[in-house]
Image (cartoon, rainbow, N blue to C red):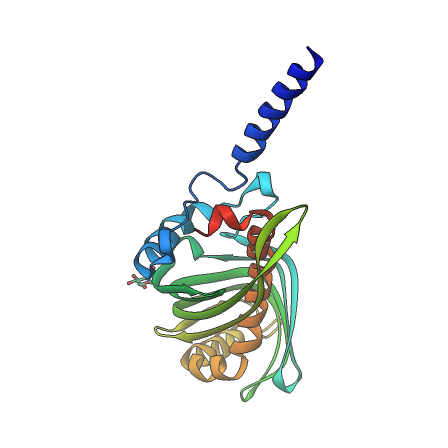
Length: 239
Ligand SMILES: *[C@@H]1O[C@H](CO)[C@@H](O)[C@H](O)[C@H]1NC(C)=O
Protein backbone atom coordinates (compact mmCIF):
# COMPACT_ATOMS: atom_id res chain seq x y z
CA UNK A 1 0.00 0.00 0.00
CA UNK A 2 2.74 2.41 0.99
CA UNK A 3 4.52 1.59 -2.23
CA UNK A 4 1.43 2.37 -4.27
CA UNK A 5 0.98 5.70 -2.48
CA UNK A 6 4.59 6.53 -3.09
CA UNK A 7 4.18 5.66 -6.74
CA UNK A 8 1.04 7.80 -7.00
CA UNK A 9 2.83 10.64 -5.27
CA UNK A 10 5.75 10.34 -7.64
CA UNK A 11 3.52 10.26 -10.70
CA UNK A 12 1.52 13.26 -9.52
CA UNK A 13 4.67 15.12 -8.64
CA UNK A 14 6.30 14.23 -11.93
CA UNK A 15 3.27 15.25 -13.98
CA UNK A 16 2.91 18.47 -12.03
CA UNK A 17 6.59 19.17 -12.24
CA UNK A 18 6.81 18.57 -15.95
CA UNK A 19 3.75 20.71 -16.72
CA UNK A 20 4.30 23.57 -14.33
CA UNK A 21 4.98 26.38 -16.74
CA UNK A 22 6.93 29.36 -15.49
CA UNK A 23 6.37 31.66 -18.47
CA UNK A 24 3.21 33.75 -18.77
CA UNK A 25 0.62 32.14 -21.08
CA UNK A 26 1.23 34.64 -23.86
CA UNK A 27 4.73 33.27 -24.41
CA UNK A 28 4.67 30.71 -27.23
CA UNK A 29 8.01 29.64 -28.70
CA UNK A 30 8.48 29.94 -32.44
CA UNK A 31 9.07 26.70 -34.31
CA UNK A 32 12.42 26.85 -36.03
CA UNK A 33 12.85 30.50 -35.00
CA UNK A 34 11.78 31.87 -38.36
CA UNK A 35 12.18 35.67 -38.57
CA UNK A 36 8.49 36.00 -39.55
CA UNK A 37 7.28 34.11 -36.47
CA UNK A 38 9.72 35.87 -34.14
CA UNK A 39 8.72 39.30 -35.42
CA UNK A 40 5.01 38.56 -35.04
CA UNK A 41 5.42 36.96 -31.61
CA UNK A 42 7.64 39.68 -30.17
CA UNK A 43 5.33 42.38 -31.54
CA UNK A 44 2.38 40.71 -29.81
CA UNK A 45 4.27 40.14 -26.57
CA UNK A 46 5.59 43.72 -26.13
CA UNK A 47 2.35 45.40 -24.91
CA UNK A 48 1.76 42.54 -22.44
CA UNK A 49 5.32 42.09 -21.26
CA UNK A 50 5.87 45.80 -20.54
CA UNK A 51 3.19 45.51 -17.82
CA UNK A 52 5.64 43.36 -15.88
CA UNK A 53 5.31 39.80 -14.59
CA UNK A 54 4.69 40.02 -10.82
CA UNK A 55 4.88 36.23 -10.34
CA UNK A 56 8.44 36.33 -11.67
CA UNK A 57 9.33 39.57 -9.90
CA UNK A 58 9.77 41.31 -13.26
CA UNK A 59 8.95 45.01 -12.92
CA UNK A 60 6.80 47.15 -15.16
CA UNK A 61 8.77 48.42 -18.15
CA UNK A 62 6.21 50.93 -19.47
CA UNK A 63 6.19 53.20 -17.55
CA UNK A 64 9.80 52.52 -16.67
CA UNK A 65 10.31 54.18 -13.27
CA UNK A 66 13.50 55.15 -11.59
CA UNK A 67 13.79 57.24 -8.42
CA UNK A 68 17.11 58.81 -9.16
CA UNK A 69 19.53 58.89 -12.06
CA UNK A 70 22.59 61.07 -12.37
CA UNK A 71 24.45 61.31 -15.64
CA UNK A 72 27.75 63.10 -15.99
CA UNK A 73 28.03 64.32 -19.54
CA UNK A 74 31.12 65.24 -21.55
CA UNK A 75 32.50 68.63 -20.54
CA UNK A 76 31.51 68.25 -16.88
CA UNK A 77 27.81 68.86 -17.45
CA UNK A 78 25.82 67.04 -14.81
CA UNK A 79 22.13 66.12 -15.02
CA UNK A 80 20.09 64.54 -12.27
CA UNK A 81 16.60 63.17 -12.74
CA UNK A 82 14.30 62.55 -9.79
CA UNK A 83 11.14 60.41 -9.95
CA UNK A 84 11.91 59.72 -13.57
CA UNK A 85 9.59 57.81 -15.85
CA UNK A 86 10.09 56.67 -19.42
CA UNK A 87 6.94 55.84 -21.36
CA UNK A 88 6.22 54.64 -24.88
CA UNK A 89 7.79 51.18 -25.03
CA UNK A 90 4.40 49.49 -25.25
CA UNK A 91 3.91 50.97 -28.72
CA UNK A 92 7.31 50.02 -30.12
CA UNK A 93 7.14 48.61 -33.62
CA UNK A 94 9.34 45.63 -34.40
CA UNK A 95 11.07 45.99 -37.76
CA UNK A 96 13.06 42.78 -37.89
CA UNK A 97 14.21 39.93 -35.69
CA UNK A 98 16.55 37.05 -36.26
CA UNK A 99 17.91 34.36 -33.98
CA UNK A 100 20.72 31.96 -34.81
CA UNK A 101 23.05 30.00 -32.59
CA UNK A 102 22.56 32.04 -29.44
CA UNK A 103 22.69 35.39 -31.16
CA UNK A 104 19.65 37.60 -31.69
CA UNK A 105 19.34 40.72 -33.79
CA UNK A 106 16.34 42.87 -33.00
CA UNK A 107 15.50 46.16 -34.70
CA UNK A 108 12.56 48.27 -33.61
CA UNK A 109 11.41 51.86 -33.43
CA UNK A 110 9.38 53.82 -30.91
CA UNK A 111 8.46 57.25 -29.62
CA UNK A 112 9.63 57.60 -26.07
CA UNK A 113 8.97 60.31 -23.47
CA UNK A 114 11.12 60.93 -20.42
CA UNK A 115 9.56 62.87 -17.53
CA UNK A 116 10.62 63.89 -14.07
CA UNK A 117 12.10 66.59 -11.89
CA UNK A 118 15.55 67.57 -13.02
CA UNK A 119 18.60 69.42 -11.83
CA UNK A 120 21.28 70.37 -14.33
CA UNK A 121 24.44 72.35 -14.05
CA UNK A 122 27.25 73.21 -16.40
CA UNK A 123 28.04 74.30 -19.89
CA UNK A 124 25.88 72.87 -22.64
CA UNK A 125 26.87 73.82 -26.19
CA UNK A 126 27.49 77.54 -25.74
CA UNK A 127 25.22 78.22 -22.74
CA UNK A 128 25.81 77.83 -19.03
CA UNK A 129 22.78 76.26 -17.36
CA UNK A 130 21.86 76.11 -13.70
CA UNK A 131 18.42 74.56 -13.82
CA UNK A 132 16.07 72.99 -11.33
CA UNK A 133 12.55 72.22 -12.45
CA UNK A 134 10.27 69.91 -14.43
CA UNK A 135 11.55 68.01 -17.42
CA UNK A 136 9.75 66.38 -20.30
CA UNK A 137 11.78 65.14 -23.23
CA UNK A 138 10.09 63.52 -26.20
CA UNK A 139 12.24 61.36 -28.41
CA UNK A 140 10.45 60.94 -31.70
CA UNK A 141 11.35 58.10 -34.00
CA UNK A 142 14.04 56.36 -32.00
CA UNK A 143 15.27 53.53 -34.23
CA UNK A 144 16.98 50.93 -32.06
CA UNK A 145 19.29 48.21 -33.32
CA UNK A 146 20.23 45.51 -30.87
CA UNK A 147 22.50 42.53 -30.98
CA UNK A 148 22.07 40.18 -28.03
CA UNK A 149 24.25 37.18 -27.23
CA UNK A 150 22.85 34.37 -25.10
CA UNK A 151 24.49 31.49 -23.31
CA UNK A 152 23.15 28.41 -21.54
CA UNK A 153 23.30 28.39 -17.76
CA UNK A 154 22.19 25.40 -15.71
CA UNK A 155 20.58 25.84 -12.31
CA UNK A 156 19.02 23.01 -10.30
CA UNK A 157 18.97 20.82 -13.39
CA UNK A 158 17.14 23.42 -15.48
CA UNK A 159 18.73 25.11 -18.46
CA UNK A 160 18.26 28.83 -18.91
CA UNK A 161 19.27 30.81 -21.97
CA UNK A 162 20.57 33.97 -20.36
CA UNK A 163 21.82 37.18 -21.89
CA UNK A 164 25.60 37.15 -21.98
CA UNK A 165 26.19 40.50 -23.63
CA UNK A 166 24.35 43.10 -25.65
CA UNK A 167 25.22 45.87 -28.04
CA UNK A 168 22.44 48.41 -28.53
CA UNK A 169 22.60 51.40 -30.81
CA UNK A 170 20.10 54.07 -31.71
CA UNK A 171 19.37 56.67 -34.32
CA UNK A 172 16.83 59.45 -34.12
CA UNK A 173 14.69 59.45 -37.24
CA UNK A 174 12.32 62.20 -36.23
CA UNK A 175 13.46 64.64 -33.55
CA UNK A 176 13.89 65.33 -29.87
CA UNK A 177 11.73 67.96 -28.17
CA UNK A 178 12.58 69.44 -24.78
CA UNK A 179 10.11 70.98 -22.35
CA UNK A 180 12.15 72.08 -19.34
CA UNK A 181 11.13 74.65 -16.76
CA UNK A 182 13.49 76.87 -14.83
CA UNK A 183 16.64 76.21 -16.87
CA UNK A 184 17.98 79.39 -15.45
CA UNK A 185 16.96 79.55 -11.83
CA UNK A 186 14.85 82.60 -11.07
CA UNK A 187 14.94 83.95 -14.60
CA UNK A 188 11.91 82.84 -16.61
CA UNK A 189 12.73 84.95 -19.71
CA UNK A 190 16.25 83.61 -19.99
CA UNK A 191 14.99 80.11 -19.25
CA UNK A 192 12.58 80.41 -22.17
CA UNK A 193 15.29 81.67 -24.50
CA UNK A 194 17.67 78.88 -23.54
CA UNK A 195 14.91 76.29 -23.97
CA UNK A 196 14.22 77.56 -27.46
CA UNK A 197 17.94 77.38 -28.19
CA UNK A 198 18.07 73.76 -26.98
CA UNK A 199 15.13 72.80 -29.17
CA UNK A 200 16.63 74.46 -32.22
CA UNK A 201 19.89 72.61 -31.63
CA UNK A 202 18.46 69.25 -30.58
CA UNK A 203 20.51 67.40 -33.18
CA UNK A 204 23.81 68.72 -31.91
CA UNK A 205 22.72 68.03 -28.32
CA UNK A 206 21.87 64.44 -29.20
CA UNK A 207 25.21 63.97 -30.99
CA UNK A 208 27.07 65.30 -28.02
CA UNK A 209 25.07 64.03 -25.06
CA UNK A 210 22.68 61.40 -26.39
CA UNK A 211 24.83 58.33 -25.92
CA UNK A 212 25.41 58.45 -22.14
CA UNK A 213 21.71 59.12 -21.55
CA UNK A 214 20.62 56.38 -23.94
CA UNK A 215 23.09 53.93 -22.36
CA UNK A 216 21.63 54.71 -18.94
CA UNK A 217 18.07 53.98 -20.10
CA UNK A 218 19.24 50.73 -21.70
CA UNK A 219 21.01 49.76 -18.48
CA UNK A 220 17.87 50.37 -16.41
CA UNK A 221 15.58 48.60 -18.88
CA UNK A 222 18.01 45.72 -19.20
CA UNK A 223 18.23 45.21 -15.42
CA UNK A 224 14.52 44.35 -15.64
CA UNK A 225 14.35 42.52 -18.98
CA UNK A 226 17.39 40.33 -18.24
CA UNK A 227 15.48 38.69 -15.36
CA UNK A 228 13.03 37.26 -17.86
CA UNK A 229 15.71 34.97 -19.29
CA UNK A 230 17.06 34.16 -15.84
CA UNK A 231 13.68 32.97 -14.59
CA UNK A 232 12.03 31.27 -17.54
CA UNK A 233 13.63 27.97 -18.62
CA UNK A 234 15.08 27.85 -22.12
CA UNK A 235 12.63 25.08 -23.12
CA UNK A 236 9.68 27.47 -22.62
CA UNK A 237 11.18 30.23 -24.75
CA UNK A 238 13.12 28.48 -27.46
CA UNK A 239 11.79 25.67 -29.62
C1 LIG B 1 5.53 58.35 -33.46
O1 LIG B 1 4.81 59.55 -33.50
C2 LIG B 1 4.46 59.97 -34.81
C3 LIG B 1 3.72 61.29 -34.68
O2 LIG B 1 4.42 62.20 -33.93
C4 LIG B 1 3.59 58.94 -35.48
O3 LIG B 1 3.32 59.34 -36.80
C5 LIG B 1 4.32 57.60 -35.49
O4 LIG B 1 3.45 56.61 -36.01
C6 LIG B 1 4.74 57.22 -34.09
N1 LIG B 1 5.54 56.02 -34.15
C7 LIG B 1 5.36 54.98 -33.34
C8 LIG B 1 6.30 53.83 -33.51
O5 LIG B 1 4.48 54.93 -32.51
